[in-house]
Length: 66
Image (cartoon, rainbow, N blue to C red; front, side, top):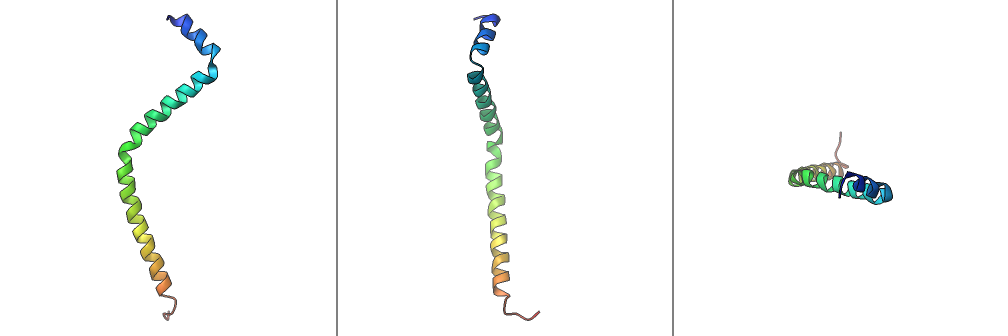
């Protein structure tokens, strides 16, 4: 397969080639961002704990005098 055949194939199936390129880009991005998943999960857990504590403080402070 030479360059002319490859260009003809791309011109014959532009939607398929476009979808294939988008798929490859998504796969590369998923691979590159996969190392951030654990750090993001730790950060989410810390934020969730802090938010739950704030909600509990607000809920329990309704009867207190200012």
